[in-house]
Image (cartoon, rainbow, N blue to C red; front, side, top):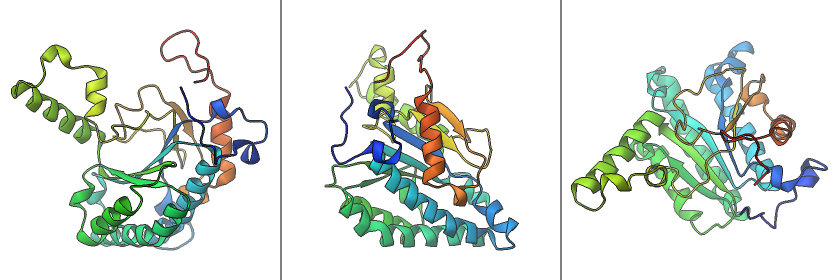
Length: 256
């Protein structure tokens, strides 16, 4: 049974929307920062800096709508292949964002969580993330989840390895392995699977993102580049989602 956040007021954002049609969990692939900057004659990192404003507006709007969790693909395990100057700037931006947004997240009762091998990030970024996770651990409102140094295949491999170790130790039997057990060993354990995946910049790939969790998610492709993604674009995606009939492999499904 879904629990609606009493502090949320979805109809003030999307008039007439059924609160039960709001996705519990939205996952986002934020694509197009570099392209946005280059189209304007600026270095790619300029786009990433402007993309941070889109993150802020998306987080705020999701809170007002009553979205329980928002997971952002912030830095993939493949992104290390980018030029060193861009990677260094991204790590610096990550640390600055976390430090600057910490107090606001606490005020808005938003809990920060990170998935992926984020502990392997350079110290300034990793330490900043750890500080915000600790500072917001008591928050009981929406969860903002950052996928950092993240790859879905690596996540699933680590989960399988953990389950195999439990079986080797005699703690479980092979027959005990289930969808639920695998989900409980993933980085996103405790979060509902995403209902909606949004990808910007018109791209139509999953890019090794939440491969297990997105099995039944609805997909929405936005043509705008990520720095251009705003409240109106998010509302369009949610209205599109709300109009769909989710079947989960069956013939019909009512909103949950």
